[in-house]
Length: 447
Image (cartoon, rainbow, N blue to C red; front, side):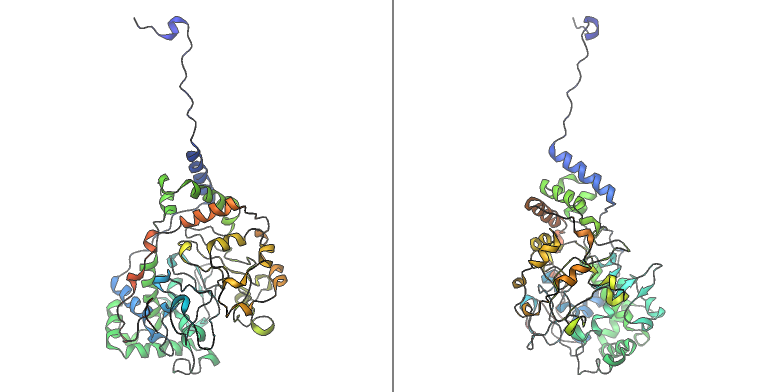
C-alpha cells in the first residue's frame, strides 16, 4: 500500500539543483553584456529597384568615370578582394595590374587605405577623416559645399551614402588624373559643378547609358539629370550587393545560441569588457554619433596629405574641423566581415588581423615597436619618425588596455564571427561588359 511521506514523518525530497553548464554561463553573460551595451543585429537596407542597381553596377565598373579612362570605382574595391585591393595604400590613376600586385611606373600611391564597402547604408561619416558626413539635424557636409545643391540631394535614395560616390571622381590620385578634359582647371577652383557636368556629357554620348538612366529614373529626361543621379545609382548597387546581416554574431543576436563557439563567446565577452565597445558601438560596430574619430597611435607612412614638415604627415580629422585636438584622429571603421578586409589602419599599417589586435595591447609601446617591413617595400622608407607627436594626442581610452595571448586569440575568433559566409565570394557582382566598351577590371585580367 502506498503511503505519503508526511504520513510517516519524513521530509519531502527536494529536486537536485540544476547547475548551469559552462557554455550556458558564457551565453548568459554574453547576452547580459549585449543588452547593457545596446548591441543589435545589422539593420537591413530597404528594397532597391533592380534597374537602378544595374545602372549603378555598370557605372561602378566603367572606367569612363576616370579622367584618363584608366580606372573605375571598383579598381580599388575589387569584389574578389572583399571590396578592397589587398594593398596598404592603393595605386590609382596610371597604375598597372590589380590587387596586391598593382603598381605605378613612378612608384606613386593614393593617400590612404581603401575602406571596405560593406553595409554602407548604416554609415554616417565617410572617408577616414569624415569629409563626407551627416551633421546633427540631417544636414550633409561635403568638400563640394554649395556645389551639392538641394536639388541634387533630393535625388538621393539613401541620403548621405548616396553622396559619397561624387568625390572619388574628383580626386587626382584616385580617378581624376591630369591632362584630360575632366581635370582641366579643376585643381585651381574645385568647381565640382563643372566637373560633374563634364562627366554627364561623357555618359550622355553613349546611347545605352541614356536609356539606362531614363529607365532608372522614369519621368526624367537624361538631359535634365545631374551626376547626383549617377552617384545615387552607384550607391544603390553597392548597398544592394554588399550589405550583409547573416553572420554568426547576427544570428546569435537574433536568438540562436548555437551559432557561436565557446571561444567566440569568450571573445565577445572580452570585446565588450576590455574596451573595444568604447568605440565600436553600433550594429555595424562603428562608433555612435559624437564618438566617430580617435587617435589609435598608428604609425604614419606614405605620401601623406600635405601636413607637417615635408607634407608627408596626415592630421586626419583636424583637416575637417581645424581643431588641433582632432589631430591624427581617424574614423572608427565598421567591423563587419573584417576577417576578409586586410590590411588594417588608415594607411594599411597592419597586414594581419592578429597584428592589428595586438597593437591595442599597450599602444604606446606597440607604436614604438611597429614593424614597417610588413608593408610594400616602396612605402617602408616613407615611415615618419613622429611617434612623440602621435602619442601627444592619442586617445586616453586606449591606455588601460592590456591583452594576454589567450584574450587576443579569443578576440580574433569573435571577429571572425562577424563574417557573413555570403561575403566570402563576391565575384558574381562583376559585369561581363560596360556600355563604354572599356575593359572591366577583375582579378586575373590585365589593365
